[in-house]
Length: 70
Image (cartoon, rainbow, N blue to C red; front, side, top):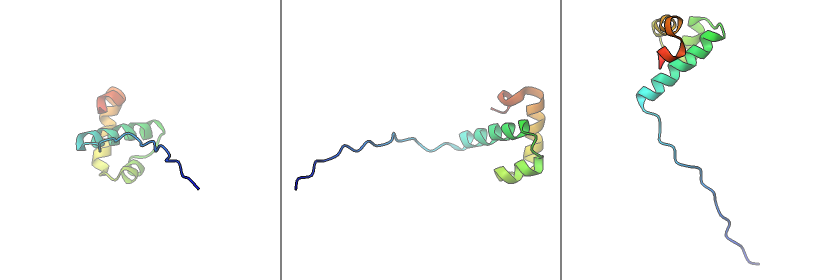
C-alpha cells in the first residue's frame, strides 16, 4: 500500500492584536451594543470593563458616532 503525501494548506499566520488594537475593538463592540439598546451595566459586564468606561464611551459615541471611538 502506498501513501501519497497530501498537501497541507496552512492558515496565514496572524499576529496577535496589540493592546491599543484590543482596546479599540472593545470600544467598537460597545458602539454596536449601544445601537442595540443594551444597558451600560450589561455592556460593562459583557466586555469586562468598568461602568465608568462604558459611560465615557457612550458620551463620545453620542457626540461623534463609532468613528469617534476609534
